[in-house]
Length: 217
Image 1 (cartoon, rainbow, N blue to C red):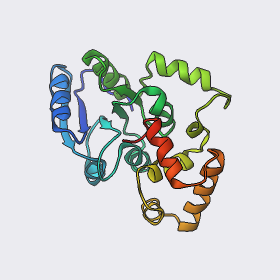
Image 2 (cartoon, rainbow, N blue to C red):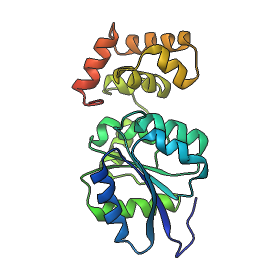
Image 3 (spheres, rainbow, N blue to C red):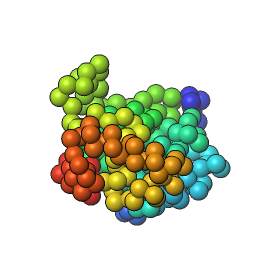
Image 4 (spheres, rainbow, N blue to C red):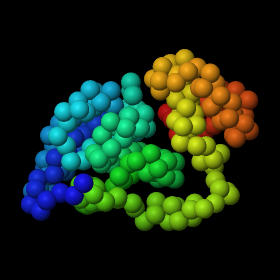
């Protein structure tokens, strides 16, 4: 979605920390061609407003209560595929960046990035592009066409990774089935494949792996 010249870029912020939202609003307010049109403290609140949301870019944290950034992104790209999302996270790019870009994120930035980098990223994705940092770009090239040397969780399909992430976050299988609108048998089948690919035998092992690799908190 290209933005016309001189158009004010409308930004919506989703983060569970009020101080972070305040800081982002302050940074964006310094740009003469941007404005924050709304905010939400978690993904569920964002999705509640999604149908009527007149934003050009959504900034979203990945670790939030009720509905995290990964789950929210997946639903958003189904409901509003044209709306670009920039993920802001405390996690390094090699932990989440590739997966979230594959899920449809338009960009992935560390919360420690300089303000001017954030502004550049917003402008880039508002104009229909992707914002890929040099670090993530190098990783994309390194991973292109090969699975060798990948972390175990990177061998999973997108659906398997989604279910792995939900299990690692402590969700019960029946709740996962309900949230994804699939049968419990399908969830169990994905779980079996996940355990096999990751050479593990229980949910507790998946949770331990996710914690050790800083995929969940």
